[in-house]
Length: 248
Image (cartoon, rainbow, N blue to C red):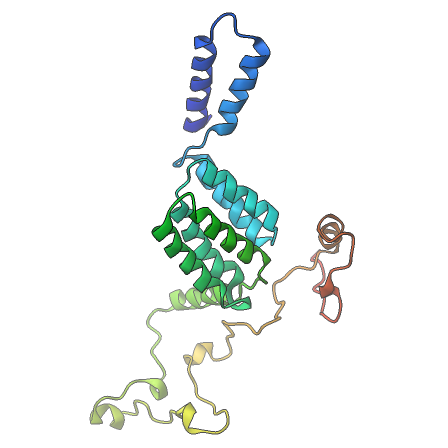
């Protein structure tokens, strides 16, 4: 048993022992069940399990489930700012480039919670959670950073290409700092500059929108979703999009 479970068990035992001998067994069990249901430790497993449930529900675009876990946390006394902070993370981690308005709304909601407080700020949080749940999702920027970070850690001493180095002194200019750099705004058309070190020139850290590299197409799971969550209708993404075969 975890420490939280042990505390709960001891509390329930104490309640049972302290109950009057004449207490009806059914009534006693009902009250004990209520005590278990009502428990919420803001530093224990419930705290982390429920915020995880909220986050995963938003990521899965299940607004009803997300609203339920939001209500569970708030009615149990969770700090609304803790929830708002996690929602700020969701706005970039899960919604990201698919909806640029998600992050400003998340930050505004955090500020609203600071200014208003409970119980009224539950309305602001409900607004935000519904918005994040129903927003399209994209992890492109988040995954791009992870790829770039991996490359950066491989060799932290890779120099900046000379053409994009700053050249504040004449000596630096003579040494070739900044030479060959094309100032993009000066041209009425795209121009090429080398922005990455030589060993990463062919690397695409930020993948193009719609890129499915590394994504799994699992027909069984898709059919399950269509049946359980889409009223048995085909997913719109079946039309005109390349399918990534299920790995063997």
